[in-house]
Amino acid sequence: MATAETLENYLLQLGEPYEKIGESMWKINDEFDNIDDIVVFLSEPLVIFRVKLFDLPEGNKEELYRFMLELNAFEMTHGAYALEGNSVVIVDTLEAENLDYNEFEGSVSALALAIMEHYPLFKEKFFK
Image (cartoon, rainbow, N blue to C red; front, side):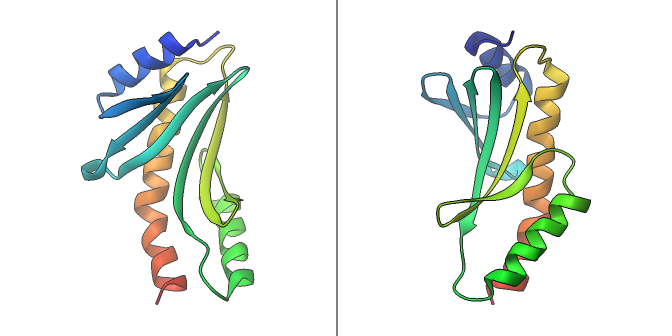
């Protein structure tokens, strides 16, 4: 079972800057590697990864939601786009029970890749 200590060790292995922001909660923040503000927290039995991308734009929400669902279906290797209040976020969850470093690193890398590849598309389509 992954513990807070396990996750802290995985974060050290990852080699990206991070800070502890709460009980069993960390924020990875490396603007140069497009790993910006990914929050990782242990909420047994899950390890949850979350990153806020932007606040919902005015108007054209139906097209935005469709675009997010299409990305979820065809582009996301880990996690999914979701709404959290008035924000668009990416969320991924892994089971803490048998979590290993490769799974942990895979989720962080997939979120970073989604940010790097998809954020410019969101910006171009919905924030002109």
